[in-house]
Figure 1 (cartoon, rainbow, N blue to C red):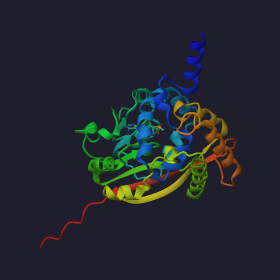
Figure 2 (figure 1 turned 45 degrees about the vertical axis):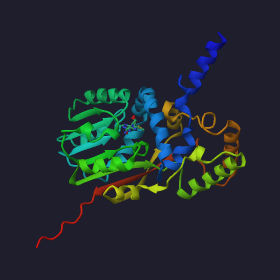
Figure 3 (figure 1 turned 180 degrees about the vertical axis):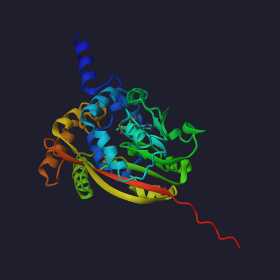
Figure 4 (figure 1 turned 30 degrees about the vertical axis):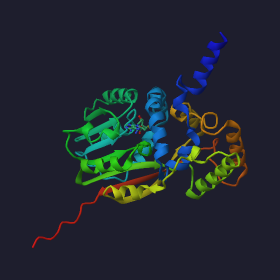
Length: 325
Ligand SMILES: C[S@@+](CC[C@H](N)C(=O)[O-])C[C@H]1O[C@@H](n2cnc3c(N)ncnc32)[C@H](O)[C@@H]1O
């Protein structure tokens, strides 16, 4: 009986039988590293963690989204400044349960949206939501974006490629960007957004310094928490893949305290950092204390908060043609 209770508690607390998938803390790494930089080790973590967690999160995610329209508002912030025509062909990456997909299907009512998503459970809900709108201009393709362009083989080129609230999760971004470039029409563009939840870059760096100091004092390699960040910027990645950034802007989306509480109930976003990561609980507790004591602004949990997002638009650059004699 005791064993049953222990097992039940562990499942409830850690959200799954396989503890292996929950090895790295959620809360610290993403705000600190994903907003500005690309880190291969963090991406690997997201990959292994992400495969399971999004299937598990699907129904809670949609319930949350239907109530608060949080991801829809994020998608609106991304799409508003873009020139997407009614008859455009748009490729959407990681469409989830369809918040951005449905908006796109409305914007290009006379065109077509191809939505690639890896989680079968998320995709199933997106399909169902689309059916309810009565529109039929979306093709869903189940699979990992690393499988592009094979996943969309035979579907032709796209006027735009859009990714809402997911781009930092993809692995091998340079290879992916090269594939995306090959899928765009010459006048096409790629648009994606990145969370800047950690606040200003200098606050992120200050927090990171505090955490590093504590880890070093305890003989823990800071890489355990931060990964081997390569500090490759998105501009650089895009440039290497043959893109030119044409717009790099920021916008905010308000998240109310109640909304935030419910967002935390989605398994993918639950607060687990400290207990499960590479950092022992007492060290994590010390970090939290030190961060709270420091003057570095923290994420205010109990106030309405403007979540900052960075939106990047990039166009493929084609080598200038040599003048013919
Ligand atoms: C925060 S949700 C965003 C979903 C959606 N874009 C929206 O606006 O609601 C992240 C989604 O990215 C998907 N995802 C993550 N990595 C992926 C990959 N490599 N290939 C395809 N989908 C991926 C997840 O399955 C999840 O549905």
